[in-house]
Length: 382
Ligand code: PLP
Image (cartoon, rainbow, N blue to C red; front, side, top):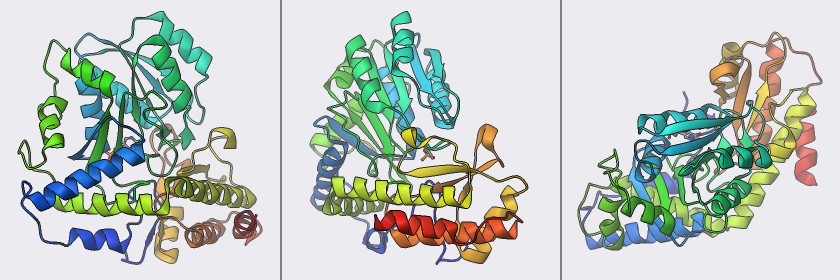
């Protein structure tokens, strides 16, 4: 892979050199006053990005650790848990909850669809669930699930709501407090445009109470909120060594998100997503999900008949220097995924569509060359 390659996968995303340079600074003592200030500022910025007044905890680890920490603080063995799933990462939430000893029911929708709220409500009313967990944007499908409505439902039924925002936070609006998301987690490497290595988990007062009132210790020692709360109020204390240089990157990354402005950033993501989708459709690609449920962070497109997954992606990378992702689970080799989040700009969108056109053409697919970039340019102009 060349250092000039454009990474258009749904995470990790292209990292701004400013963020990369911040990581090259000397590694400070994790209990020093200087690092404590960086930690405090980062946590405050994360609270603004999450739109929460609850506690926000950045931890060394990836999104999967975030899921484990989120669920393990509020789930005890034997608890009834409902997982709303329409893809690979929803299924993973179920696996983690089962691993924690929960009695798990799944409310499943086909890949590419979003759940109907009335149906979820019926399911939620059928059993005394303690927790409902869902994924905002499932990266296997590109569907943006109705997080706000799910949150309202959970509040109405007095069920704790855990939301995976690994593929949305920083690129699409997530209003943790307003939507009633009791525990929310994300990763550093997607729309926040920081390298992989950190997960961030927020807990509101209800979730903190649930942790306080449990009869058993959380399965995760490292991820026990109770052990981290003193660090959040006094970061010069020690519990476990924070990833100092990754925190520099998150600090810089959050600053860049807030400098752009959350609304401006969400609008940019929306513009880039609709330009990409317009271009893909003009090429004749069939998209996995309908525009009405499509996320602004990634798009999944089926291959036209005869186009081979490995050869297409090899051409994208070797001949055009653009990396796109294959699919997971049942869509493996049938579709590909393009991430358009983080620092994505119009040149990235146009270059990616141009490369897709070149690579599809090489695979023998017939269409009007230039149709995709032209449609995207028209959308961007409007
Ligand atoms: N949840 C979603 C929606 C994801 O897209 C991912 C990773 O792509 C994860 C969870 C797991 O995150 P990680 O790979 O950082 O462990």
